[in-house]
Length: 148
View 1: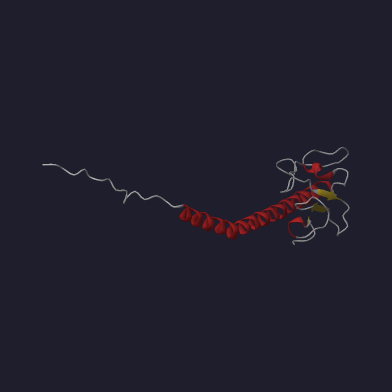
View 2: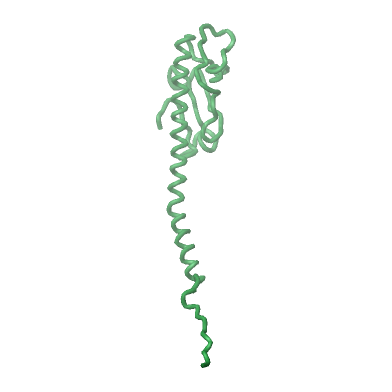
């Protein structure tokens, strides 16, 4: 008896079409466009919170320095006086910080001034993301005399 040759069908082996692939890519792009900015704004908020915490830590260390020596470090001495004993400073009992003064969250140095212009305590300033005085949003200065 003669057998008919069987035809192989591709019914169960269907692939993904170009249209289906474009739909999936479009959905992923829309999701990224909606979620991405929110993630980046949280990063900026975290950096500002970190700088506020560091400034508070510096102010605590400066308070201890003043209790021991009777005065805050001068602008010329800077916050390095919290780590290394300055010349002609009696009763220094530091170091007052566990490590060197770090850069701010945007890798800019903190600005220190004593006597400050905003009360009896030193002024400590982070110039924000742009590293320039003033600014708004992420570029706004973060200062020791205000919690904003």
